[in-house]
Image (cartoon, rainbow over all chains, first blue to last red; front, side):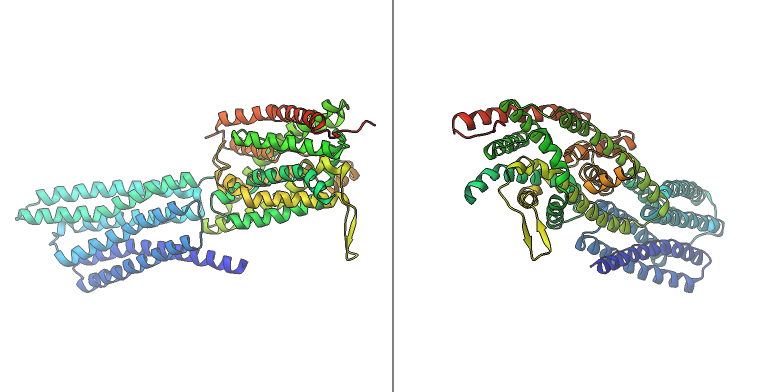
Length: 217
Length: 352
């Protein structure tokens, strides 16, 4: 019976790690995808887009599996609600990353050269926010004292991403390289979309901070 | 003859039942309430270990209780146990915190007054001392264990899921230990007053297992406690534990471990012998209240957490119970003895 119980624990632990690996990879693919799009490397971009689509489906499957195991085996009854809440909200990070690449793939906005670096920087900051929220989530499971450090990092990257987003939006409406108003709006829309990833990461981090307080002994 | 004996023992068995239905919640209450352990598992484990504790190690604490007032007539013992049981039932009914140990001691004092036989003041002061000391000791243990476990968890980087699994096993192990200690320490409350009038004779089963008359009495009492656990403790378990301070499974582990050690210290004859033989101070073998031990442990944990979220009103109410229970039980027993002697014409004490 003990062996059976230990294996359940091990499987669940590895499922949670696998899910968090997926979220972390989604952040990395987002950055790579945005870079490939800006550099007009279509093949690389489409590869990233396909990867993130598969990743999103897989992440959903793993999350559902964790949920079922938690309830079916009556594991962690005290923190079950918080763990599921955390996994569900962090899953929206993956969804948001996928949506950014999907809309880039469909709408194909024309991004002027002078804004290319800002877009890359914005995606990198969002990617860092995702990475930090994943590390914070890992700390929630294994090293509760560290959660706040990662939550603070997420806040920092989100704030930085906000700054770059504002710069991009100003540039979109002041540059003389774009003539059509609709194109200016289109670029503003994409700046908001890429920055949204860091906003979602921040809202997960806020929940994480509360869950960490509740978990402290 | 058998039916008559059983009838006279029935008040003790009733007391055992109410002890099982109330005190098992002190051991497994939070574990069952937080769904860490199924009620059925908790009931089976606690029943088995209560019976083992009562039969194997129940003699020590019962001896001190026996010295307090040697109830020499079976009808007197019946009335003493009935007085205690009714006090427990009445106080439970009005949701007042109650300790079976204090009710029994109060009842014996009531018998002492009625029979005009002087109480053994040495035993009484030992028992009173243990009542004050046991929750304090439990609080100290809980305070220390809380900090040790916190340090271990903070530094071991153990995964939440694994920690949950370990906590579950920990709750089962300390629960079994707690049930053993409860049986050993509290069986005296249930059957102690019947020792001098035990209707049983020593028996040997297959040349291997020898059960003295007192052990048979304790076995019967242990079974009564188990019946209490199975039939009534679920309700109590599902509502207990969060009154003074909300316990998590991990803090419940600390609380049960601390209170179980205290109950064990006040019940184990072999530990006492070991301590005395090594020239160390030993603990008197006295029935202490498992409820007060757990309350002490919860206060210890609450102190370790700087008294955050502690309900002092409930604490005050519990402290009041420490005074009202023995006085109420003494009064109830005195009145019952009066009726038993003068209305039913029973001999409730022998002059000798």
